[in-house]
Image (cartoon, rainbow, N blue to C red; front, side, top):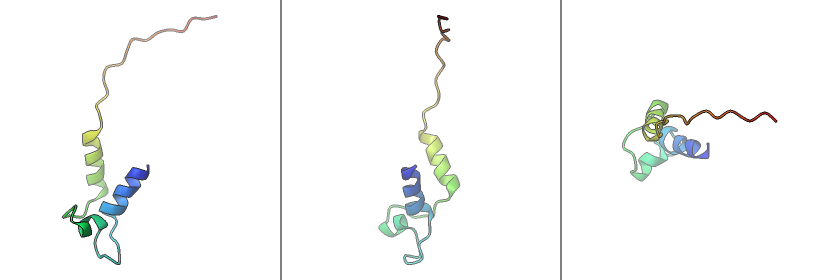
Length: 61
């Protein structure tokens, strides 16, 4: 959760004193990101779920 906030703060939030995002001021990003951009990047690196394993019943005591 902290990582998402850090990305929002540095890439999405416009700062009044800088008149741009900190990432743009540092030269890391040339454009202003949106939340949609962030979600697309998160979905791109999320591993796809694999097949589920066999179901095992619990023994009744």
